[in-house]
Image (cartoon, rainbow, N blue to C red; front, top):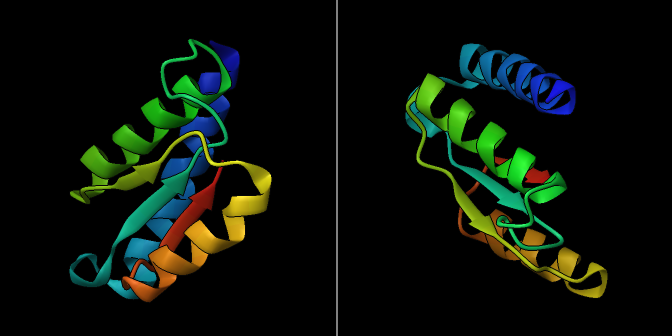
Amino acid sequence: MKKYGIFLVLGLILGAFLVSTMGLAEMKMAVIFPGSIQDADYNTIGYIAMEEVGKKFGIKPAYSQKVAVPDAQRVLEEYINDGYNLIWAH
């Protein structure tokens, strides 16, 4: 649970910074997970943090799960091309 708190705090700080500098209207957040968000471990914690940041700042996040390392760059570029300006590779 301590890990969850650290991720959540870091996510909220990053989100607050970006919201203050960019404004909510422009925010599109996406997260890339290397495994299943239902793994009850690392990816689940990241997913929960993503949801909390989204709720806190009124942003509906998008995410991709089970992204293999060789595919991460392609997925990242797809989010960039779709206008996402906050992309978190977990």
